[in-house]
Image 1 (cartoon, rainbow, N blue to C red):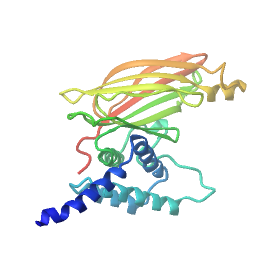
Image 2 (cartoon, rainbow, N blue to C red):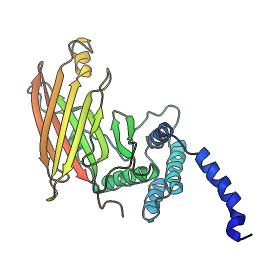
Image 3 (cartoon, one colour):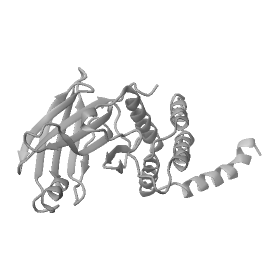
Length: 274
């Protein structure tokens, strides 16, 4: 009996075990959300450095990604107390209206998260969104096509009373996705519906198309106690050409006595992961 023949029963057992322990697409999506939700607390410096050191390796193994997730989860155990208020996702910060843009470090952190999550799910990650502390993850049934560019997108709705000076943020969504990938989220009583699609041109400019249906229940409640029927509704559909990292005001409109404006920002994450 040859060595190969001796190993055949063991190979068969290992193959059977592997097939029996494969996770479904639903379980993959649940795992993705658990990993991203685990980062809702700001990770420690040790966790961030661990993530960067793992990313510097050429291997994109499942063990590496789970090591990052475990490190973040451990940091949460030390950083959170029962009375502490949940904080935004560390790598997808919702910033005040005076700081719509991202720092170089924030872009690197976004690139790490998108790259590792995409590797974890064999290229099937479609997008990650963070909206008012709610994180959503979308997976595809097949790997995304070659040549798409990794992107970070931010859409901000700001409001003010006419002639009252400074704007304040009414709603913000942050996305990690790829070019030519449609992001579509249905609205409900707590969040607006929106869709985003981006295309990177050969010269580096970025076409960003957004559709937004935003009902400002918060301002209605503060004005007359109603959070539904009297809420001003902002509908926005824009197609704009952006330079990389440029913040653009794409719409300013008055609805029911409230001034609104929509700001957009898109950055290519390619080259951010070393």
